[in-house]
Length: 244
Image 1 (cartoon, helix red, strand yellow):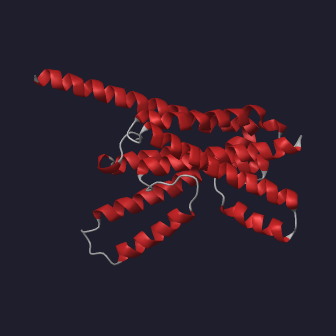
Image 2 (cartoon, one colour):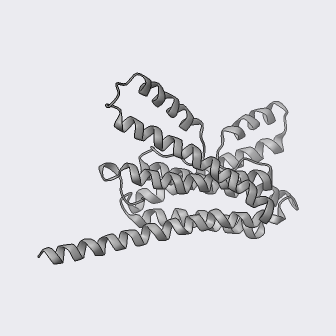
Image 3 (cartoon, rainbow, N blue to C red):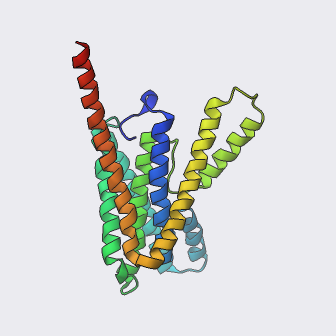
């Protein structure tokens, strides 16, 4: 799911990635909105709010939004920089960015109830989630070759509309790859929404402890990918020995 890149990467790798991490992003977005009244997985809305704050001469609001935008950008930059340094084809290149995201989610789950008690806490928790989603978005974009985006849907809906238009003009029986792309984009949308719905229900029951759920999903993702790589290597080694 993470190690295969380029021509070694296939539709199933991207589908697994989309299902697990789009669910996580949707869950975080819903819980972040309910907990902190802020969208925490993308920056489009914040850019619009920034423009409004500027017209209102709200310097404090402008600074807060700028910090949030910078945190998302910094998360994407550091994630991308680290993966390039380690090597995109190394499975461990993706472990550290995911561990950073897990730690941030755990911190919000444990200390998020302090939201609003101080100005720093009021801005810290949404900002930390935006940083984590910047990390995730860059990581997923790099491993999938920009095919999968997990933290926002605007581009996905646009691409889906384009693909559906092309499909409508394509002869039957010649659109196999196009249909796969459409299916993948639909799964991204569906699991982002499923994650959001689940996040909404769970947050009402568990409050900030709900952030433990996406953290757990990421842990399962790391463990699954790690052991799957190890088991595959052992199986290939056993097959080579058998054929010798």
